[in-house]
Length: 373
Image 1 (cartoon, helix red, strand yellow):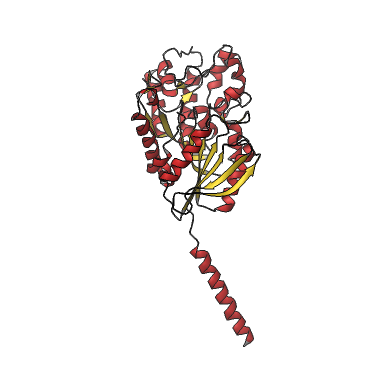
Image 2 (cartoon, one colour):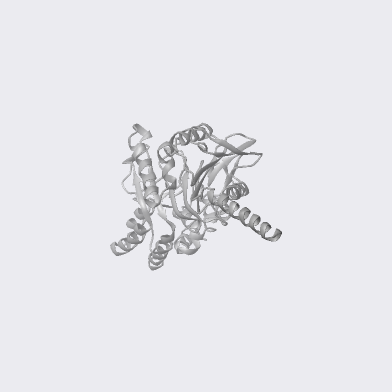
């Protein structure tokens, strides 16, 4: 009899535990916004968080978390609008962690995964950025800027190696380059980025924060809201472009590019009529429109074939008619670097050869001839 009573009590306890676990909301998606603002973007990033709080509507099955560093010694992990009242909770404060360190990014991601086991995760990265460039000079940072340190794209790829993201959104300049996209093709299903400058105001988070949790169509709406926001501005503030890339389709783009480049390995390439996607005259950096580069240098059949593959990799592209007062004639959403023998590019060319794109695209055939590598 005592055994029977004990069994009944144990059964009830187990049932009670199961019901308690079932009562916990299932987290469908967590979006981590990684904001490296211990630099000239400090005020813009602080304002971006306020706008995010104003625009985000709390739901039980999703989480919008922000890791932010705008102070020299402290950084914070914040739960945006955690109670649905427009206010946010600080989940954790970190001390003396450099936001441009790959270990910091990896630690933050692991912390979030421990806090919230979700079906999917996504990442928004907000800071300075200059594409694939090496991290050893503050002018040439790849992503972020914190105490003179930057996060290289290769280190970013390694930091993200333990998590498959639904999307990465770069609220940073120059990140939609073929070199960066190909390096990160296994890190996320989609990448949203600009191949040109991003005005320091950044994305209109008050309009797009809720869209982070939607499907592909919702992500496309983020891009449209971004372009719409800047298209309504005036003067040089009316400057924006963006692309949304399906990373699983990048291999076919690279394969077709390789076929074209090998076929034309003896051809002298031109860049004089190629659309430049760097619109800041003070930036010593080259980023050319990828399709414009192909159209300028190869025949109609090759252009048609490549454009088909490229279009299949793009969920969305959009741009304002001009950028920083300069007319945009060609825009495919993705840039490419073209090495030149001048005082600046000598610093970059050897580093460029360490990227997966250089190895896999066939570009080394032509670039090797050009720069002697």
